[in-house]
Length: 241
Image (cartoon, rainbow, N blue to C red; front, side, top):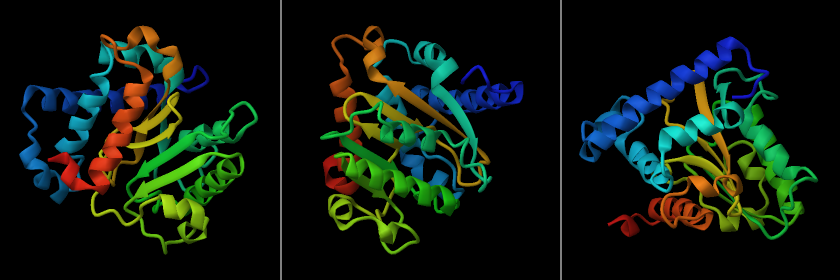
């Protein structure tokens, strides 16, 4: 939540965060139940499985709300999902551009992207994201994508065969958290939202700066494994049993 944001943007972030916390607490308390997943899907609302994943993710840290407050000034962002022209303000693109820059050594790093529709509602954003993916591959990153979007959709069909062979498109269900993971250091994730939600809330974490925030003996490697496991359980549902 950078200091150059307007008061309106700060207010949107706070509103989105409070909405997330309400559902997050409802799942933790048992008011939101996993067996009701289908009911949420029927109304295109974020389901219990998504909040379950977030409870597990924040379980690696000592204090979830303390962590969010700690990174609020430079790690929480919002963007207008409906605004197809607002590309420069899209924090996901900003995150990828940082990975593409000379400041980040992408060579040999596993960069994983998990998404639902893969920005199907904003094809200009999808095009730019795929451009970043190509640039990261040139820099030597090992790129993998997991999405419900299909390989023959616009711009996805242009992704190199090398990346496609390591990726999975057309997933029958979405990965519970939409995220980008770069190595074991950087995580960019999107909080749950319905498809009709105009404003989205995202968070960027540099895990190297959070050593004192990890619970017990948890490390950034444990967090990286958690996100890898989210992928495995989605691509191979039998692993979730």
